[in-house]
Image (cartoon, rainbow, N blue to C red; front, side, top):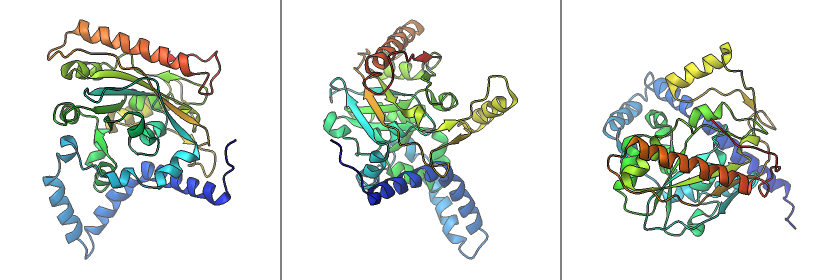
Length: 326
């Protein structure tokens, strides 16, 4: 029988999740405003020196970043995990003498499962897959925001850009598991309780990258991710949806209108189970043909669908739930 949580434990969990949500939503904007404000005060040398250093450090995120084990092991991430709770499920071995590209689905509003399982040590990835190092790749534009870039690099996050992925798959030896939330911003707009929609049919760049470097493909599904927030979903072709799509095209992420369980920002205490599937063996092909890309892309979608249907009931869904791949 699970041990009942104390009020103090529940409070700590809520505070840890709240700080993460507020960081996700407001850290970047706050950092920009702060740096601009300081430029017009007597403290102007501080932002001036920072921006000078930023120019010299501009390419660091795409050259392996500055991950610190200290941040990954923060105690707050265990409270963060326990709030929902979040669980990592292993279904097959990953050979530490190979590299991998893990496609994580769905994006949800904030990719809670992907962050907790692959960017912190709270869910036991290192114990489940000894010798394999997870590298969660996120929106490259976030690494252009002052202060925020330094924080997320310390947390072991990487830009999901070609130079960054090439570095991780070719300059860091073997045992690298590059995690990409394939659906990105488009998938976040489809996030809603009860829906299981993934955007992957036209996303083939990750397959091409896997072929170029001989990295095996691994499907990953975070059950419960779409249940964490209630989102207002606008119909295709509506003015509101067109504005969302325009914003996504310009900025790179989608402005979702969502609400949580408490104080609008706190997500629902819904279990999130991130299931790591079996690797799909991919040969190395420096210049893959379209036929090769299509073949392994099809194998990936089939494996993702199989993973979903094999684990949906044990992860809290009913047998009638379907996976919609668009």
